[in-house]
Length: 102
Image (cartoon, rainbow, N blue to C red; front, side, top):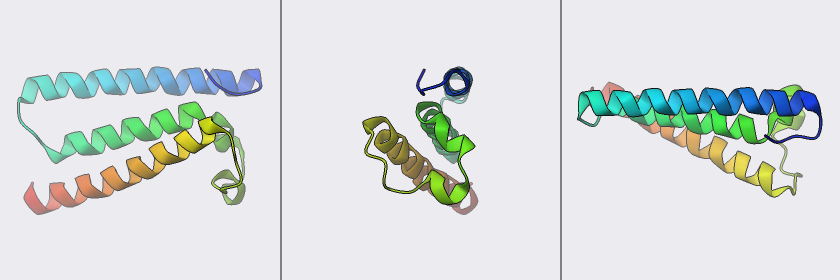
């Protein structure tokens, strides 16, 4: 759990528990289907986004104009930003793949 105050630690715990549940659901779905689908890519993108919010819960309580500014030097915030960018890229790839090949 990350964050400076109790509010951030609670939100971080909730998001990381949600991430574990989403990851378990995705793994069960992959095991049941036994084939690759672009929906799995979208699911993994969602998991990365949840991890990103779990690592830096402060971003949820900031105005949008300040939430994603690049002035944070914390390693935790940098990793969170990378997860969010990766989640966005995977979501775009998954949606294009679903509609083009699905």
